[in-house]
Length: 87
Image (cartoon, rainbow, N blue to C red):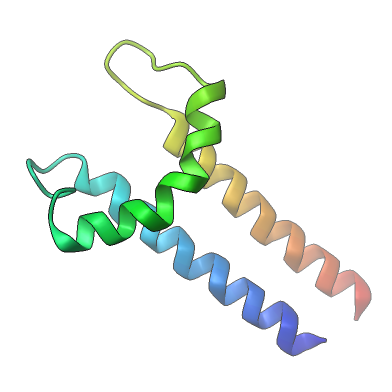
């Protein structure tokens, strides 16, 4: 059981890093059009899309990735709480 929780924790951590890199790529021109940017878009956009539908942009700033990242961190800490409760 500990292996499953550890694996899920690592997957969430890797996905968080992929999400951070994808978000930061928007600051650089044509970075998302690169091959790495396209791979990250295929991985991150399905997760970000529901947040973009719910949260409108504030001026020119899209805050939905920030909320998506916070939800991912909340899930990670919830997973840790469940694991510590079970052991």
